Structures are given as C-alpha cells and as structure tokens.
Image: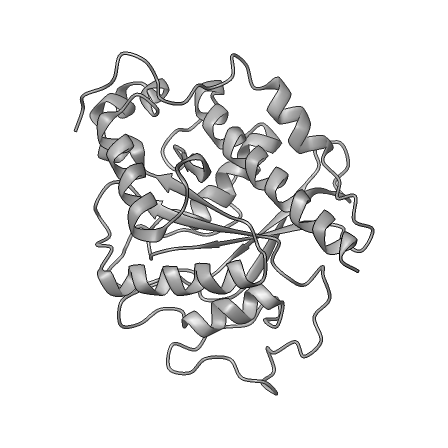
Length: 279
C-alpha cells in the first residue's frame, strides 16, 4: 500500500497562488445566482464535513471547524440536517465567497439518507435546515419541502466523496444508490466529480509526504476502481488530504484541495451559463 510511482500521474501546480486567486475572485456570471451550490454526498464517515472544513481553512488561512464531524461510524451519520455552508471573506465578515456547500446525511446500506431525498435536494425541493427522517423520505406538503425552487435553490455541482482507507465498506447496494443519484443528476444536466479522501490513512507514503498523493500506486488503483464502479471519468476524480489531523495550514495540503475546488467551480460555472442560455 505504500509503494509509489517515480513520477506523479497528475501534476500539482508549482504554487497555489493561481488557484487560490481564482477561487477567491470567482463570481457567477448568471445574475440569478449569488452562490454556486455544491452538494457533497457519499458514505457515512467519508469525510464530507471534513472537506467543507478543509476548504474553509484554506480560504481563511487558518484551521476551522464549522461543519461538525465525528469519528464514530457505529452510530451512523453525524450529520442529521440539510445545511448550506457559506464561507466568510477574510476582508469583509459581512460577505461570503461565491461558492457554498451543502452537507447531507451519509449513505448507508440499510439506513441513512433516502436516495429520493438527495434527488429532491438536487432539484431544490429540500429547505435548508430540514432534518432527515431515516424512516420516511420528504414528501410534497411537508414542512421541509420547497414547492417552487428557483435556480439558486437547486444544486449546481454534485460531488461524490469516497474514503480511501477501507474503514467504510462500500457495498454493492451503496454503489447502486450512488449510481441512481448520478443518473438523476445527469438527467438534470448537473456536472459531477468525485473526491477521494483519507489517502494519508490508506497509504503510508502519503502519510509521510503529502506530495505522494498522486504518486501512490494504491490510490491510483482506488481512482481506477471508482471510475469503473460509479462511472465517474478519471479526470473528474480528485485526491485530497483533509485538515482533520494537521494542526496548521500547509501549502502542500492546500494544493490538492484547491485543484479540486477550482474544477468544481469551473464545472458549476459552465452549468449556470447553460441554464442562462436555455432561458
């Protein structure tokens, strides 16, 4: 699990300035949208909330922890509500960067969030703050149901978050759920990417040196497997190390997070432009 290629199979930029400036200056050109809405979904314990915290940390320049996390996987998903996270600008506490993230209850084989609820969220029908009911999906007329969503309410990018460390067993049933969600997103024209987390926990070479993320033979195998099982193209799958252990901001940890974030924004902006052109 610790062996590496002599050269990375995906290059990281020499410095983070270009990607960081791109993210900080991003503003949707579609006048009907103030924030790009990114929905993270995946198994319980995949690192969805940790990724939100990591993005927040990169943009703030210091470690943050707004999206609460829990390492206990036995009790199921720690996230219970549908919540939108906007990231405050350092220069102005009253304004936000123009990309926001929706966290959602994790997928499980026999419990967790209903696939139908995620599809409703894609369409903008789930109100912020809705508490998911594992026994019953959201229905029209329920308090958390938004009957007339606009473009701002809808999801603009769908990101699958998958752990590399094997602590979470990805069963065939969970893969089927993820593929069903992807098909629904595809029918709506929503772009999709995947993020593989916890590479440092899965591969000793990455734990010792983050720059080995894209040299790790084990993680390359994980990327190839995800491409086959879930159907996400190789160039839309990104590796990151979340800021869940590292106590201070580091450029080498920022780099893969920013690369993934830039691609998320780029895909989302094209989706918003398509919506404007189709009006």
